[in-house]
Length: 171
Image (cartoon, rainbow, N blue to C red; front, top):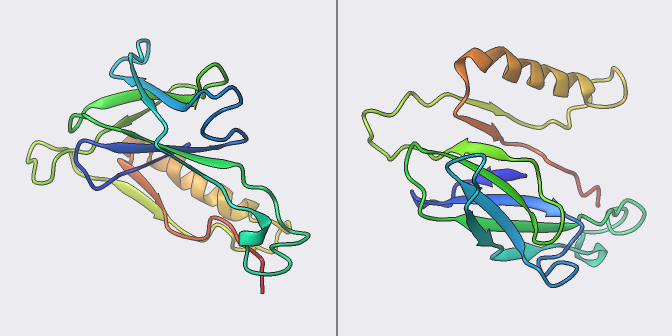
């Protein structure tokens, strides 16, 4: 899963991909269970959006022929009523089905809050750089992960991936 700011101070969007559409196998909605205590996820938000795309939506061959892989369903649930600077715990999944492990995030402080700690972030991009070592991007990935681990003593408030997440491989 991943998190995204919505542009509203008291919100956070929780997003994930699964093989089940928003209505679920038994008509149960995609759901985020969340709260301020990891052991008591007492709030529930149901999915507002769910999307996918098909082979026909791709640009051209080979993206819409031999290279097409069904992407699953992309779920997005917006949590509301969040407090600036507060830590929240959450799990996501399908009611009556499988849920993710419990994750957590700290809601950003309000703009101009002088008591807020400094914002530290890691930004990286284009993980698809071919490194010529093993026919994959393993070296690039490992260098990025090593940098994230190296900064753990000065934990990042935010990690930004600003590059190619995938390639359609079309013409």
